[in-house]
Length: 639
Ligand SMILES: [Zn+2]
Image (cartoon, rainbow, N blue to C red; front, side):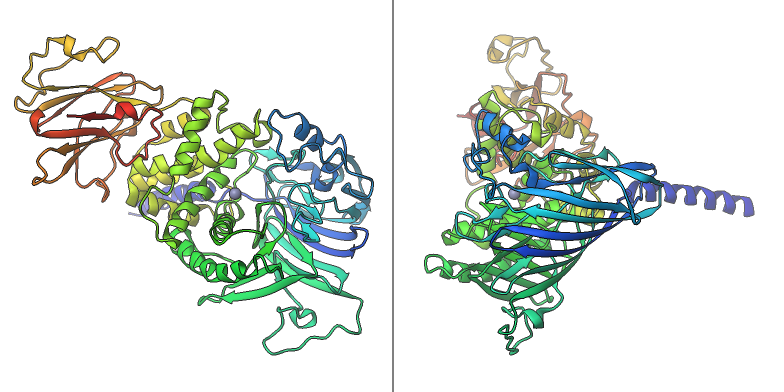
C-alpha cells in the first residue's frame, strides 16, 4: 500500500515536472527605464537607459547584443544596399537611404555603457551593438546595464522617422537601443535590413520630454494624464501649459517586447471605452479629407475588439492606441502606426489587421524573422474572419484573396520555402506572398484537415497555451494535433519546409458493374496501378482519384445527385493513413461517409460508392476550396 503510493507519487511527480518543462519554456526577462529628451527641431534625442536583465536560460552569457535600428538609415548600410540591389525593390525605400543628407540620416551614438556600475567593452557593428561583459551572467542571475546615448531620428523612409508622407512629425518605432533576444535557439542579433523583429518580454518605464505643443500616443499607459491633458486627463479637467516650454510624458507598460510612440502637434485625440474597461485611443490629424472616416471607424474598432476576444482570446492590457504615422500599417505592443488618408473600408481593414497582430505577434511573440508566416499569415487569416463578421459578408470564402496569392506564387517559379529566414528571401515578392498568403493558407487548409469546429477551438487553445511564450511551428501544430487527435507533422513539414504542391484529380468514373479487368476505361490515369473489384457495389459507381502533386492531403469528395428531391449531396471522406485518424463531421459538408485510408505512396485511389452512375450530377474534390489544389479544373466530374 505504502510502496504503491510512493511509486505512484514518484511517477506522477516525475510526469508533472516533465510536463511543466515542456509547457513552460524559459524566457529571458527585461525591465527598461528610459529618460529621453527630444530636440524636435533637430530631430535628435538624448537618452539615459537602465536595463535590468535576468538570465533565465541554463547557459552562462559572456556577451550581450543590442539592436541599433537607426543606424540602418545611412548610405551604404546593409539595409541601403539590400534595398537597392534586391531585384524587386520596395518603392518606399529604393535608393532613398543613399540620398539622405547628414541631417536626415539616422544614428545611435553610445556614449557610455556600464554593467553593474562598471564600464564594459562594446563595439558598434552596423545596426548591432556587441557587448563583451566584464562578468558573465550565470543561469538564474540578473544584472544591470546603464547606457547614455544620443540618437538622430532619420527622415521617415520605412516605418520609423520624422515627417511621414502624410506630414506626421514623429513616427518613433525601433527608436532606442533594444536588447536582442536570447532564447532556446540562441542569440538573435540579426542586422536590420528593414524587415522583421524579435524581442525580449519585459516592462518599460519611459519618460519623454518634448516641446509642449506635441501630442503623443504609443505603447504603455500614461502615468501623468492630469499634467498632460490633451484628452488623456480625467473628464472635465482643464489642463493649462502656459507656464511651460516642455512636457514630460511618462508611460509604463508591462509584458511587452517593444515600445513605440508617435508625436504630432495636429493630432485629434478620441477615446472609446469598452464594457470590460479597455480604452481605445485614436490619434489622427485634423484633416478635412479623412477626419470623418476616422470618427466613423471608431465604433467598428470597438466591435472588432469584442469579436476578436471571443474568438481568439482575451486582450490582456487596459489600453490600445490607433495612431496615424509610419508608412502603411505596422503593429507594435498596445499600439499601431497606420497611414490615415484612406476610405472607410481601407481604414477599418488596416486597423483590423494591425489589431489582430496583437494576438499573432505581440502576445505570441513567435520569432518573426524565422517564422514571419506565423504572424503575417495567421493575422491575415484571422483578420479576414473578423472583416467578414464586421461587414456581414458571408457570400464568398473570406480567404479567397490569400489562396489566389498562393497559387500565383506557386506557379511563379520564384517560390521559396516558408522556413526561409525573412531577411534572406531572394525577392520581396516571394517573401510577401509566402508570409501573408501561404501563411494564411496554412491555416485555411488546417481548417479543412481537422474540421472547422475543432480548428476554431484549437485556435483559442493555442492562445491559452502559448501567449507570452514565443511558440514555434511545432508548438502550434502540437496544439492542432491534441485538439484533433490526428498526426499532423507531415502537413507542417510539407507546407513549411518544402515547396511541394497539392494536386488531386478525378481520373475516371465508371459503373461498378463494368468488367474491371478492362483498364482501357482508365486511360486518364497514368502509371501502374491495381484495380480491385472486391469492393465494388454492383449497382454503384467507382471513382478513380489520382494524386498528381507531390504533397499528400486527405480528401473530401462530394457527390451531387441528379434528382434534387433527394438529399442534395453526399460527402465521402478519405483520410491519409499517416494521419492515424480522421476529422469529425463538419456542418459545411454534412455527415461524412468515411472511406478507407489513402497511403501517400499510392498514386491512385479507387473510391467505390453505392450511388448508381445515372443518379450522379457531379462529383467534386473539396468543393469548400479550402485545400490549396493548384489545378482545380481536374477536381470536377460532371455528367
Ligand atoms: Zn501584418
